Length: 485
Length: 96
Image (cartoon, rainbow over all chains, first blue to last red; front, top):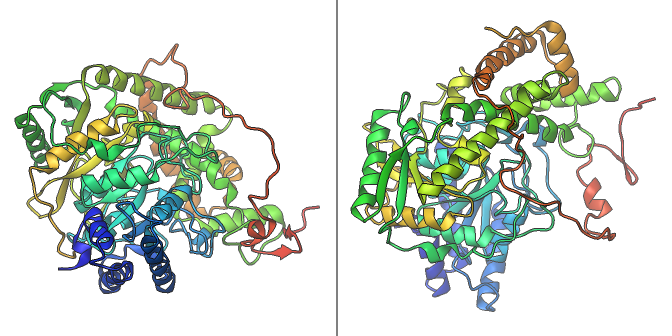
């Protein structure tokens, strides 16, 4: 029995009771990482000295009554696209391979204010562009359930680190499914909040209108508690929202009696693995047994979400990633002739293939002559998708479906055909376009033993509904630890 | 492939994107962008006439604040990661 087998809240209780010191917990996490990293490669950076210093500092804070919350002293990991002062932040890219931020991301600061000990920075698809964590410049992360398979992405490092129990919980970011899909593949619980709930200050931007930070953990309780800690209104992010309903843990109630849950027929069509379908439908049945009213309906427009997403996300990425020019931070090429050549060479050498592909597509759809036909068309489609969800939420409290059409693919199988890889995000992407909250939690395993996730989608600001439904479902099964745990 | 991307287009997009692509990368980019556009053209099946482009998923207002000087971004911190620094400036190649 390791302390890392516990959920974050369970470990937090032991620390609070003085049964375990913060340092002991941090040392167990570091030891677990040292043992397992060769097999999973969840982390880009672990700074042991810093971790132990922070652990001592947090212990002093707990003893002095400064940290009293449920996460005080609990070891966490943070995706490597969130700036951490004095600690390497690479976005898993060569172009930021030497970047040590001089400030800390607001969401991470919020965790630190809650007494978290940050174990390290987790691996990801380069600049969060990918669904497998294979596009990292620092090598692929492996799935702790079967290391020949991908962990999903782009927050694959965060999800693998939680599943392999190298930390108690982690933060990820979700632009098109990057928390929910890898959570599903790794058999953990991950949540994307309503857009604007968590500040994006210090999150290195990919698609700013879609990006949102969220928790990855062993269970729904942890997710609710972590979200409560990181949600905040931040003047430094003008899209962050002042919410008065951030007491998410009050929704941890095993009661879905009368809750109306809609199942979109369009999420169960062609391309969905039958084993995934059966596990997700069985989850719906469990909720029905508890008194929820389950009904199938047609959401519509599902097949338009991915093309609209790629136009919008790539357009925003081409603009956001213009800042990486070899002048202010990060990599700069060695030999160049003049300023423009320096920009071009730096970027061409610093970015990987998938990032370049998306910057090129984004630059194209924003270029004069194509802007209306592609970019505005995609924004109009986004409006229609939002309307479809609005209509659904007039009838239902929660929408239930799969998080991904399949379980985790084998390493190397996805990158050769980008469109096929993009299709893997079909059930998660529209949630980002509409700004909605979504959670993925384990609901079974396929015949190969790989985890399957069920996704619950809420209306804007409907976190409590999905937390309640997820919590009620979670009570019907035991948490399954991965073989690497 | 319905969308054929010409060499001129790739050249132009490369300038916009500030990327210098190798001959092989250019050929791949032509193919990739063409295929993606074929896929994206699916959006043309939708009648979006009269639909306002939606940049933000729910109504938000502009956020105003007083323009008060602050020392939040210290000079040293701003320059700390410069690939090349000269005094209090970022050094760039000669441009004129």
